[in-house]
Every structure is written in structure tokens, then in C-alpha cells.
Image 1 (cartoon, rainbow, N blue to C red):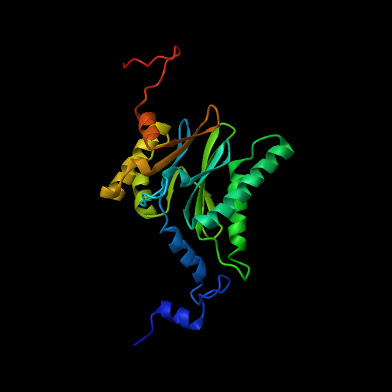
Image 2: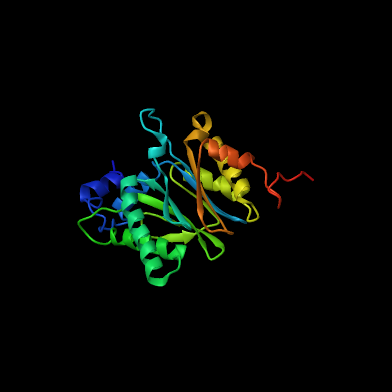
Length: 255
């Protein structure tokens, strides 16, 4: 009886270092790190006509933990946010490096940094940890949303150090199922409110009886002011049900 490929790799030691290729051309430690990412709670990001948002499931089931102490979305600068999936302690290192980079750019050039420069730096650091010995890969995917001038942008970096721009994307648990639904329902003309409603509906379909809006965190950045706003639980419900105001600050009349 032939030995399974995975067992052969373990016997031969191809999975003992992130820098060793298997005969099939795989970096097995990197692939293991990708599996760790899919164990993390999910986030959905979306570029909309009036801005960009990230909706994250904090997935905290322990009632002894205070919800507000658990963040899945981090502020890099007032116009850039990131969400993570995988080993959160790994992500914290990358987030702090991105925050320092952003502030250095403001001090040096007196202007906000472009979102792509931030995700590129994060991706470069990740890549280094797949090429040099003595360290393991970062077991985390990072989704970055921001405003570049008046243009909303969304990027995702995986554990290999690759990054791509997206109109809508998901990371974490059941990301393949979520992406399939996003492909069916996403439209460029969606507003942030419409996009958030779609994202919540997708989460509800995926999570089923485990769905609980109180465990979600929403951050969005509008084109007009380029400053992030953070909402939780009841605040998300109020945001989705609030009516737009007219020039007098009154509720708009229905047509």
C-alpha cells in the first residue's frame, strides 16, 4: 500500500521549515498557516458608491469576556482600517508596523498615506517570513480598506505575501461560501448602508442559529470626509434604520 502524499512529506521533513519546497512545489508551512487563517472569524469588506466598509464577526462566546475589549477591526490612520483573520497576536505586530508607517508618512510629507503603500509594506514583511529560515510564516490574512483622495479602495493580503485589490471580499471562516454570495449580490452602485445589509444577510445565512448581530463590529469611511466611523451592536441597527436628512436636518419625506 502506497503511503499518502501528506505522510510522505512529514517523513521526509518537507513540512519542518517554511523555506523548504516539497517535490510538488509547495511550501507546506505556508499552507498550514493558510489553514489557521480559515479557523479565524470572518470579515466582509466592500467598496461602495459613497465609501468603503468592513463588517467583522468577533465570535466571542465566553460571557466572562467583555465584548468591547475584543476588536477585529483596527485603525491604521483616520482614513485607513484593517480587519484580520487567523492568529490575532501575529496580526497585532503587522498592525503596529502599519500604524508607525502611516504616522511617519504624515510627519514627513504632511499628507495621508495611500492605502496601497500600507498593504504593500505588510505584504513585504509577510513574504520575508516565507523566505528566510529561523521563523515561521505569519498565520494571518489582513483586509485593508481606505480612502485614496476621494476614491475608496479595498485590499487583501494572504499569508504568502501576495496582495490584490477588490471590490468586495471576505477573509476567515467560510470565506469561499461568502465570496460566492458576494459575486452574486455585489453591485458597484451599492451605498454603504445597502452593502452592510447584504453583508449581514450573508452572515445570517452562513451562521444560521449562531448568528448574533450584537457580536458584530462595523467600520466605514465615507468619500466626503475620509474619516472612519466605528459602530457596534445596537449602533449598527440604528445606522441601518436611520433616515437620510434633508438640508434642514429633518427626516426626508418619502416620494
